Image (cartoon, rainbow, N blue to C red; front, side, top):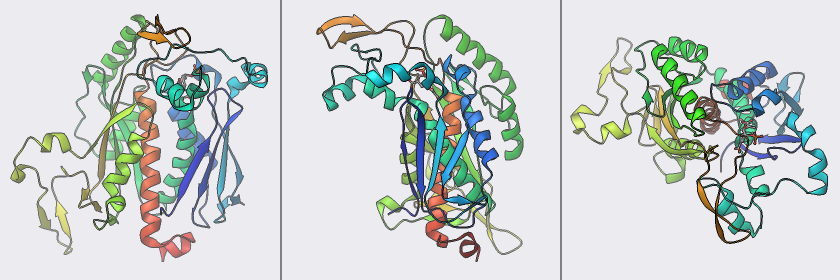
Length: 371
Ligand code: EPS
């Protein structure tokens, strides 16, 4: 069993999102402004739709923190949906706008079949990526735990649609600063301009765009995770966490896909003694994980995000109320969520690393972990 776990609840247009995080050690100082900062980072990004003008995500902690520190009890988190005001009357009587023409690529169809529903509304309310706001709040708690041990987690966007960035060869901190100042979270200034233009063109064409992002964790120790059992492997746990993000359909550990094209001598990260008797490396093609365990190099993960299925230009589908061919109806949505997904990726990676760190160090209290 994991050392820490969380569950979320809440619908896209319901009153609020809720998360409960169980297993955080006692004595961790919590700065709620850092949670709000990550919530704002997730809301940003060029290519978002009208909903983001309504929401201003803010965290409320209703359990597990007293005097600014965790107590070891479950931490309960709440984020209000401002849009709820526009939905509450319909919610009470149940006359929400019905959707009987499932969007190809969305949870609509499989969800209607699975739950025996004539309308996809209950499916899309919960499948909505609005839920990822709760995950980002959980991840912001995990980041505060990791920071106590000198571990940082950041992200940047590498690709949006056909536009691929050239990631500058700069120290990690400088890459983060560049990504933070780009409204597509991309550290390549030229690519940022072209990515924005691609998003504009997709919006004009009534279409959507996907892309890829990288999440990198630095400062962690060797030995998180374990080779001894499939579900203890750190890479497997991180891959599951990333693929659980809506629209993420692929994950790469380090340079996995390029490594698959090369002979072993060009792939494996050779080891050298440093002047303090430790092992050092000059490459990190493995992405900081060998044998399902962290090896002390930065952990590098990449994720592929599909273009979201809610397109302004209709796609061909079937009206499940009539059984006849039909075109999808437009629902208010985003054009590109890749920059937001990168922030969610940070949260999921931070959560898994916090889990693995507590597992390694013992997690009743921060004092015990540091000892
Ligand atoms: C989403 C559709 C849009 C997005 C939403 C995810 O919302 P709405 O249907 O209210 O316009 O903006 O994302 C968020 C609300 C968010 O906070 O990220 C969907 O169908 O997945």
